[in-house]
Image 1 (cartoon, rainbow, N blue to C red):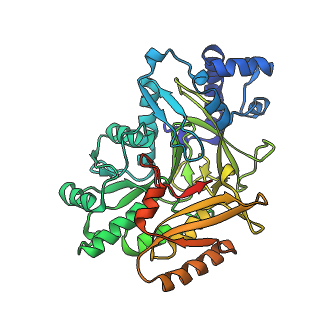
Image 2: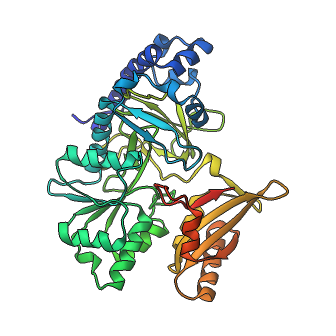
Amino acid sequence: MNIQTQSLSAIKSFQEQKLKEQLVYLQANSPYYRLLFAKHKIEVEKINSQEDLFQLPTTTKEDFSNYNFDFLCVPKGKVIDYTTTSGTTGSPVTVALTENDLQRLAYNEEQSFLCAGAKLNDVYQLMLTLDRQFMAGMAYYLGIRKLGVGAVRVGPISPQMQWENIHRFKPTAIVAVPSFILKLIDYAEANGIDVNKSGIERAICIGEPVRNADLTPNTLAKRIQEKWNLKLFSTYASTEMQTAFTECELGKGGHHNPELLIVEVLDDEGKQLKAGTFGEVTVTSLGVEGMPLLRYRTGDVCCYYDEPCDCGRNTIRLSPVVGRKNQMIKYKGTTIFPPSIYDALSAVPEVKDYIVEITKNDLGTDEIQIHIALTGSLDVAEQKIKTSLQSKLRVTPNLNFVSGQHLQSMRPADSRKPLMILFR
């Protein structure tokens, strides 16, 4: 029986047994956690429940970066894959995986695809890279293989080549960054392609949210679905936790895989928050062999929902990420997270591309400048952009209109994700 459909008490009991096994494993094999347990006089055999987790200190991104290979629990000869974080919020960090970890990763994504309505005759077109030590591309491919369905590994190539492969292989679903789906639509409209006759039914969306905090479709999702009758599935994942949260058909938040992860949502003092309250997602790995993490603070701000889902799963569900703790911006007395800026810009069709640049002024407060490449009239677009920003943010940042080529020059050449924000 699938653990996700069992009772809450059965899920909790299962997780607590896995937690005890993971703690014993960390005590025996992790240089970092062995020192941490000794420093805080922690006896792992006395940690028997999820409530006991609060006796343990949290692990931060800085800890994982500064002591990276002290988290490795196996001899290097047992590592078969080295991945790195994208470095979106700092320097890239290595995550080493064993064969068992890759099998766990494949299982995780198989469950994610099933949650998102996978069918036996599906063909998935993967519009993300499988190289550059990028875990997501490899994870999705492994999940598709475990499902036993078709994969078209085209990578992040041009819309023209994507459509050539769509016509050739007839995929039923795509895995893509949502803003790239808009580019597919633009190319299709310019070249007489009817997107709704493509045979593609679903899109597994990575890297960008397609829902607001209240789970309604955000502006980006609305713009896609105005033109293309696609079912969009939001996902949330990170390289460090080696696990994904994916929506079911009902779109009520990303489902937790309790056999793979214990999830907490903490306030600034490290206390567990109630359902529906936004805080920092904090995770404990279950079943990871190479680099397991204990109470790892992801920096991502979400809330969770704990009522059973009508899909039959009884697991908690996570909201979209509303921001990252280290990317919270204070601008003219207003607290802003970058996703709200992205949503405002997505509402304006004339915005072709953009980068949000955050700097500190002489007073030490945040300044926002948005570099924007447009299609169409500057005068018309500028007013639309200002109106949208004012409506979403209640303030209007500085705007700088540039060419698409200039924006590309601002991005690292080897970036694996579409860089939308720069902190200077």
